[in-house]
Image 1 (cartoon, helix red, strand yellow):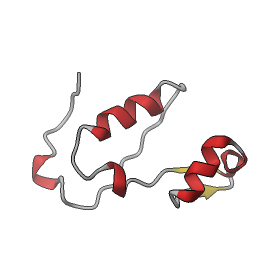
Image 2 (cartoon, rainbow, N blue to C red; image 1 turned 60 degrees about the vertical axis):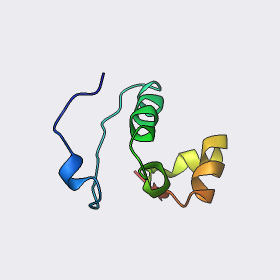
Image 3 (cartoon, rainbow, N blue to C red; image 1 turned 180 degrees about the horizontal axis):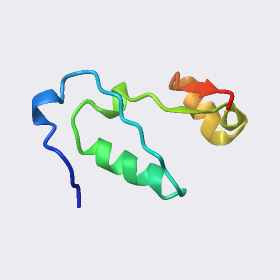
Image 4 (tube, helix red, strand yellow; image 1 turned 180 degrees about the vertical axis):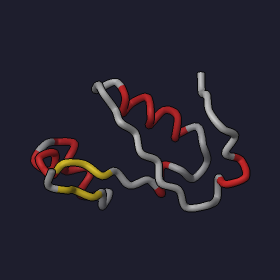
Amino acid sequence: IEQGDDIQRIVSDRTLVIANHQSTGDVPMLMTTFNAKPDVLPNLMWIMDRIFKFTNFGVVSMIHQDFFISS
């Protein structure tokens, strides 16, 4: 179930989505939600702590040109 405002009017605009995710299940849920929207996943950038750069997920994130920060 997807809830929230209707974003049809702004679906082509640049958007910043901030998710305060609390568990490992949040990322797959976000990816599933974004996958249902055309052209979202190819234009998605993740911002994460630099410690993730040294994991399997980090390798994929570097190839995808995601952004790492030092918190």
